[in-house]
Length: 442
Image 1 (cartoon, helix red, strand yellow):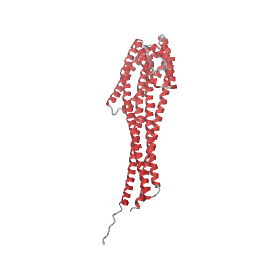
Image 2 (cartoon, rainbow, N blue to C red):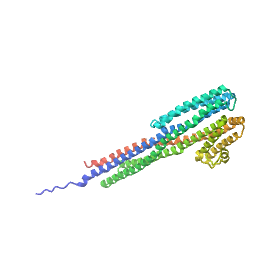
Image 3 (spheres, helix red, strand yellow):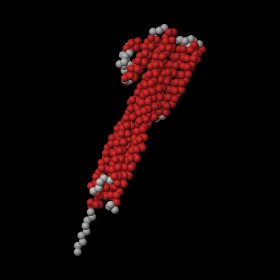
Image 4 (tube, rainbow, N blue to C red):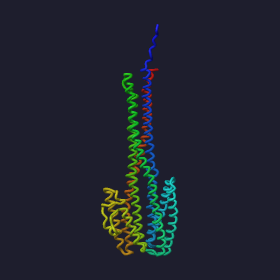
């Protein structure tokens, strides 16, 4: 008798393998989705930390350095110009001088920390520290000669002016250009971080979408195969895993995009605006100092008038041939550092700036003694009103900057907390969903 041995049923042997394969692909795709989300979160989070918490605030501090140094030199000129009958006001200027010196020390410390990886920037900071020491010695010498002279309000004696000339020359020819270059150098750190993270954010978002769609395809393929092979409706556990995978895809892509938008808004609408307006405010303070120096040193009045005009054109650019021509041609259609302002901000700032320039024009038509009184009164008030407008804009843009960074930080925190938990739960549900089917073949 011939015994016929039936071959094994290959289809039934292949079913568990197919289920395991589809389940494995689903698990791997969810793992890849989780990795893409976490990588994107880590990358954009690093950009937010650089711009919002590390380099960004320190760069803004170095921008303030230029204004603090300009103001320090202007305060020396004002104290020398006031004379002995303005003793309390002189003392107030010297107190403000000491405060600016403290602020400069703090700004230089921040700049040095930021430049730890760049020897060139370190040397710039060290040169500024050394140069400021020399400036203080010269300014102290001028102040001592002024006290010894006991002059009344107005131009001090020639030895006082000569001592101050050496101090202000050092400030404007050596120290202020270095402070400005330091801001440019440290600003490149933020620009590089922004450019790098912008492209990384786009790649991370694209990777999350592609891998997330692949995970959904694998999960749907697994459920479809199980439903057709076992003639059952979809398994609840696998349906929940698919929903969690879709939620991880959407949530991860949305939150990474939100981080990218926060990074972009913080850089362009916050950081860049604060940087530009802070620079405009610093140059404006230096212009007000040029007015003091114009009155203090008659031998250099033409030089100080020319530097005043150059700085004015930087802030509000108008085609002109001389300072009187510039001041007569001021109009709302201008360029320059303040040219990026729009709407009410532009109109309000320009009106305050124009009043400041009108007061300056009037001062230059008065005799020496009357010009000094006008400078100490109406002109200084016009400058302070203009400076308050700039200060308000800076504070508002700083708030916008901080708000954008907080939004990005919030998105990052939500992403780290929700997406990994959802995808890990989805992976566990895949195992729960396929286990009963595999047990049927044991």
